[in-house]
Amino acid sequence: MSLSSIIKNIPKAELHLHIEGSLTPELMWRLAEKHSVSLPYQSVEEIEAAYNFKDLQSFLDIYYAGAGVLIDEDDFFALMWEYLSKCHQENIVHTEIMFDPQTHTERGIGFDVFMPGFLKAMQKAQDEFGISSFLIMSFLRHLPESAAFETLAAAEPYYEHIKAVGLDSSELGHPPSKFERVFKKAKQLGFKIVAHAGEEGPASYIWEALELLGVDRIDHGVRCQEDEKLMEYLKDKQIPLTVCPLSNLKLCVIDDMKQHNIVSLLEAGLLVTVNSDDPTYFGGFLNANFEALADALSISEETIKKLAVNSFKASFLSNADKDKHIDKVVAA
Ligand code: ADE
Ligand code: ZN
Image 1 (cartoon, rainbow, N blue to C red):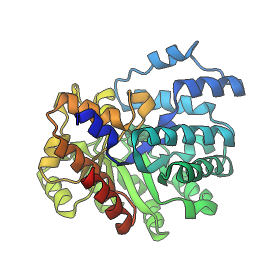
Image 2: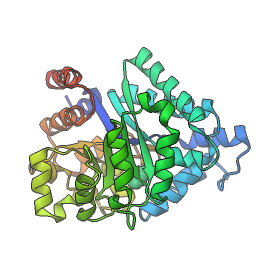
Image 3: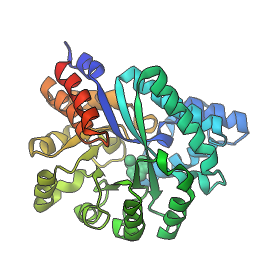
């Protein structure tokens, strides 16, 4: 079997995906027309052409503006359903999906609008495709900690539908320490904890995420190699890193996919996984990320299987469910 067929056919989990980052230019265009939202683009092609970023912030500016077309429950359903249908095509059998409530609440759109839309699509994907999914509520780190506390309180009617709490948006200048108290509260409430760290920010932000937020996983974390002690710690504790190769390339974290350190992290014994982050902005969904690695780095069938096994190991599924999926990867 070719490497491409293996990538396509192997069952996988995705653990780092922003649902707002899966908005296709076509859906953005359609919803802008539906709600008479004016976009700074004249066509779908112009939207696509605008997706050239020089760093994380230049992407975030466009990404938050794009999310402005999401207004009613049906829009959030359509967004989630399109992503989960893509999962079905790509043989993603489990996914842990981040959403940014503040991107919507700041526009006056509440949990009672987006949550029912998300949850209906997730139930439909479970029923029709057998895809399981969890939600990760992420706080925007460029906003104050008080806003994160307000968001945590506003989410209360939906706690049973939220598996984990995360931290995203502009990393530099907004270290995990800024959110120590709100994450302590989230942990007390029983949520799993994740945080973006070491994407653009330094290795010290990864330490803060571990020591001050008590994270179960690090999102990105590719700058961990700048600190040997940190590498040892991540290896010993098997703290997962949710790595996003095409994102790193598009946001200029690396200049060339050949420079990506995912294989060396794997060889150093770290629990790394492959993910798509914001697939419609970064040029591809999960399988395209695997393909890009296979094209640029010498990756064997065994490595691809290991990455797929890791995706389940690093998930928030029960041990029984992890084992069930891992057995299928091994048998594939
Ligand atoms: N929000 C969406 N994608 C992100 C990323 N790659 N880093 C930080 N915040 C994000
Ligand atoms: Zn991300």
